[in-house]
Length: 103
Image (cartoon, rainbow, N blue to C red; front, side):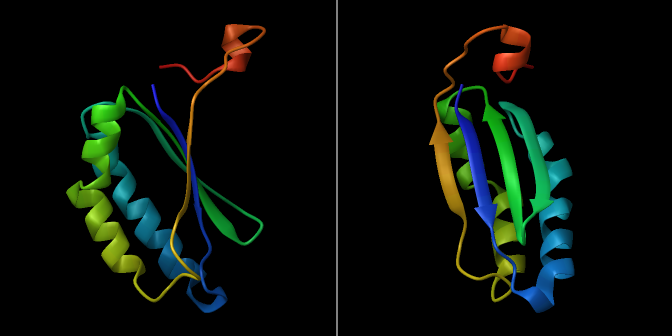
């Protein structure tokens, strides 16, 4: 179950446009096969995604999905660079209810 943490930095004058583009994609991404979690957060001048996918195939499909392609188009010129992406392997520890993402 791949877990993704991604971030993107909006240009200061485009924060509202970036927020709108990111949020517009969420309902469509939630309908993608294998999407277990796809959430957007904002802080410290960045937007963050926390994602969990059922498997590597679902993550691969998401990377070329219409929702993601459209979001990237909408962000063109509005951010300082592209997405910073980390693909993580969960290391559950302690109480599973508190130590790992779950459905």
